[in-house]
Image 1 (cartoon, one colour):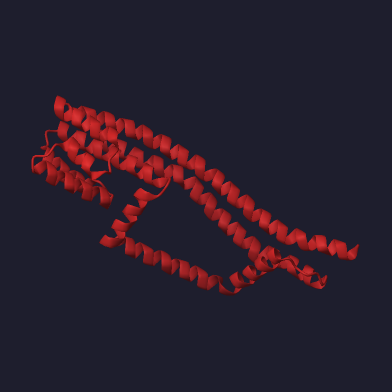
Image 2 (cartoon, one colour):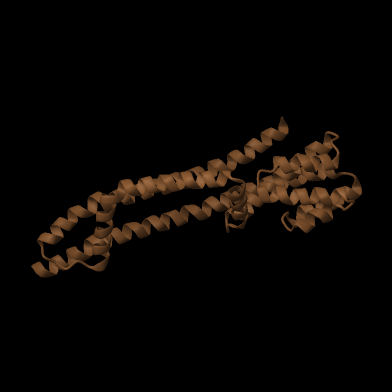
Length: 252
């Protein structure tokens, strides 16, 4: 029960931290689209009556507005079809493997994903060992518990190596996936016959690392969204004020 409580708490922290930036980004895209489609064309009628040559940025946004008005349904349908196709592809074995490999390589999400995998591996492994489950059986179970396909493949390699008489720590090191701390603590645990307790400490450490990584991720994402919104608003304002400045010059 304690094991699953910690697992659920770990997943909940990541989900709750990512919910706010995603909502803000979706709302920002919706508001920006509404401004371009409905607000900007109101000024276009005024500019057309003043017989003022529009700057490139205004002509571009007006063209984008016209394009969105004519094709918004097709765009939404295309996005929906692309999302459904991507979801179906991810559910295939090859698609899931490619998705999991990408998650480990992404600049910000990759380290976070690896910390979560390491925490889940260490806590589950330590719990199984403390319950009296044999090491090889633990490794077979872990291959099914770890949700990342790449990590599951690496654990299968570890299980084969241990079954052939190899050291667990050395086998983990050869995967080139797990962090050095896990490898070193596993090696020490094998030598001191305290593998289960050391794995529990590794899991606690990486739980804290996940907390820090999630906070750093949200700290990095929120300013990026703010800068993006400021840039979009600045472009829209320029597209309106530049023609108005030219109108003032003509009137003057």
